[in-house]
Length: 189
Ligand code: 5GP
Image (cartoon, rainbow, N blue to C red; front, top):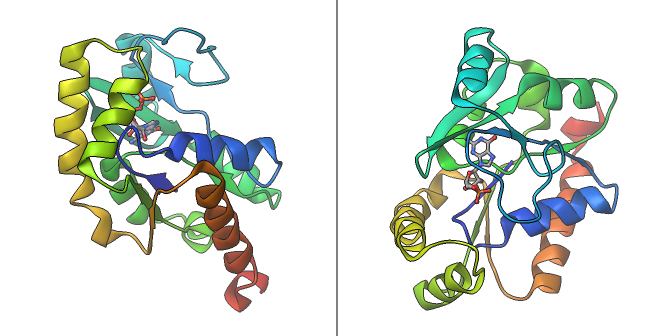
C-alpha cells in the first residue's frame, strides 16, 4: 500500500505499476465527484453517500476513511481475489486507511503487505504541484495543503519512504522495492 499527500505523485506511481502489469491497481470507492476525465470503474467507483453507507453496513470494505470531506474505501474483493491467485495488489490509500490495513487480521493480506510513504521533496514543491494540477478551486487547494502537511507527519509509521524526485527516478525506486520484496525468502514459502 502506498500513502502520501496529494501531489506526492503516488497515484502516478501506482498506476504505472499496474499499466506495466506488475500488480493489480485496487480501484477504490469514493463519494467525491469525478474530476474532468475521470472514468467510473477505472479511476474510482464513484458512489453516492447512501451507496457507500450500504457497503459499509454490508461489511464490504477492507478499510474506509473520510479524507478531504469525502469517503474513500477499498473493497475486500479488489484485494483478496487477486492475492488468492498470486497477483500483487497496489493500493493508493490515506494514512487512516493504511492503519486499518496494518491491523487487519487476514493472514494473506498481512503476508503480502508492504507499506510505502511517498512525499514531495519540499513544502514549496508540494504547493506548486497542488496548484499546477489546475483542476481544483483555491479553497480546495488550501485544504489539501493543510491536510498534506498533517498527513506527512505520519511517514515514520511506514516501513519505506520515498522522497519524490523525477517521475522516472521515483518509478525506478518503487519498482526496485517491489523486486526486492519479491525476493524475500518469507514470501517464497
Ligand atoms: P483524490 O481525491 O485526490 O483522488 O484522493 C484523495 C486521497 O484519498 C488520497 O490521499 C488517496 O490516497 C486517498 N484514497 C484514495 N482511495 C482511497 C481508499 O480506498 N481508502 C483510503 N483510506 N484512502 C484513499
